[in-house]
Image 1 (cartoon, rainbow, N blue to C red):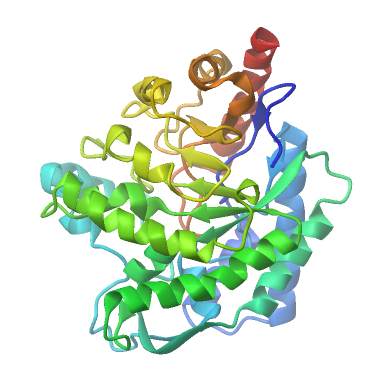
Image 2 (cartoon, rainbow, N blue to C red; image 1 turned 90 degrees about the vertical axis):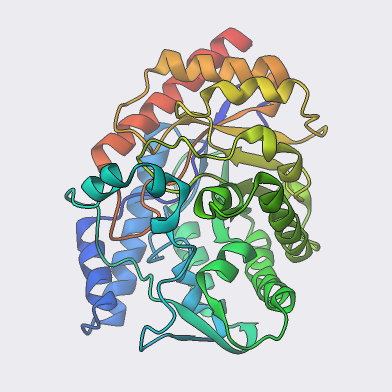
Length: 391
């Protein structure tokens, strides 16, 4: 994994707004309408080429495919794991911990009821709950290879320092899908981890950095008001062991780990604080750690890294632009944030990133594409300004 040895490198979290034509086809597929497979594949390949070129043009160093071929950063896995089937009768509710019972919604019910009615806040996201009804195994080799081939083709002629590809963590699959097959929940979790390890290894063998997406790690506390911080730490420790099991055959310097507090343009007063997560995060077998640092609930937490003990040779990817506001960050603010991190962990250990993805589900996004790319430009310019002052 490249480090900021000569200047602050720039990257982001992965998901980016899809083109309108591709979104239309994804909506058709989700609603059960027939979609020509070849036409769809061409649309995805074209979208990957477009978004990779856009990243290169704006100056992003460590690029990816924008997750153009995925309906969502979690439910994409439904096509890649054997042992699951959709809950056709809807007896088991939607996938994932229930946001409506979260600390946030319980504290601000009026706001979240109002926000749910805003344009663009709803739409099909492939969130039908899938049920584990048999042994889990990885079957997504062909679909993953399409993603790899599309990204490799799109890189031709595009300036970049490195390439990453996101994949979901075992904990998020465990939470999103319901176990009806394994007698013990830990057996279910480790079966998911074992299957996902195939995707992880294939991404690295393709020459890309693997980014493990794990928003539930930081978000679990918000979603479970019945649990204490210590309860959530115990829950997280078990899931980290399972993730490390899935990563056991991959060099740490080929892995980026990302966590965040999900897509929530809300008050955010119940976000679990970094001080309660930082030691657990550093126990994950990764060469770099990506986390929220650009929104007002977490902008102050850079000071925690003075005493956190970042292991030698590892990097931080703090979010210096946020998905939780449509305000475009000033490049000077981006530079200031990067200088803060450089002052406590060293300039070579900092890569400029984003708080989260900007279109985690293909058919819904809170930030318009025009604003997303303006934020990316601010990120790049802020990194340039910080680099001028650091080198």
